[in-house]
Image 1: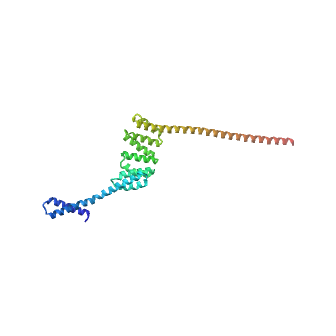
Image 2: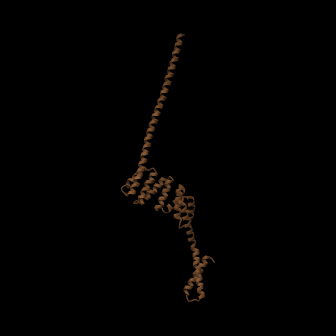
Amino acid sequence: MPVYTAISYGLSKILYCLINKGESMQKQKKCVYAAVLFFCCISVLFGKGSVETDLAKDYFELAQGYAEIKKYDKAITYYKKAAKDPMHTNAAEYELARMYALKEDWKKAIKVLEPHYKKAPENILVMNAFAYALAAAGKTDRACSIYKKVYKEDAENPEAAFNYIRILFVAKKYDEAQSALDKIKEKFVENAEKKTIDDLQEKIDKVRTAEKEKVDDKKVDDEKTDEKKAKTDSNKLDKKNSEKSAKKESSETVIKKDKKAALDE
């Protein structure tokens, strides 16, 4: 008997028994049979999703186990299986992107995260993960834009501010990073926050010092190059003058000889 037919039959019999409570024992037994049949069919019909969800849960837990022992390829396989169940899709795909990130396969991480970002562009967790993957893939401008959005929407969260400054740093936008850092120095004053601020300031200062040294070194190199070029040009000029002088002397000598020869004749 097809499932839907059995359900229809069982439900009709149950309703019949509820309406006609005074029937014979034989009919009551038939009603019990109909009730059992009905709930068995319901279990078959709706239990399929439950079985799939339970299986997806097992896949998810298995993937987590592989992730913990750093077998990322295995974890990816089972996160993909878990993601097929709608109840596990979001969590599994988030972890899937994390596995790709740990493998530094940023292109695949972005591919997994971007649909979630488009679906929920205001989700802070997704925004952070997507922006991080973009930054790691070298797409710093778009990453900066998303992190800035997170920072504005979650302004009281120090980590949002710190992440925004970090991505500006990665993007080599040091002036913007310094400006953002200056704005939060008086806002976040807890010990841990101050330590992070100090660490970020140290990194910016270090880069700026390195850049200044690089500029100074380039200036010195340019000066040396100019001196070398000037010296080379001077040597070439001296050589040219020397050759010109020698040529003149040679010409004068020839003329003198010709004059002497003419007088002797």
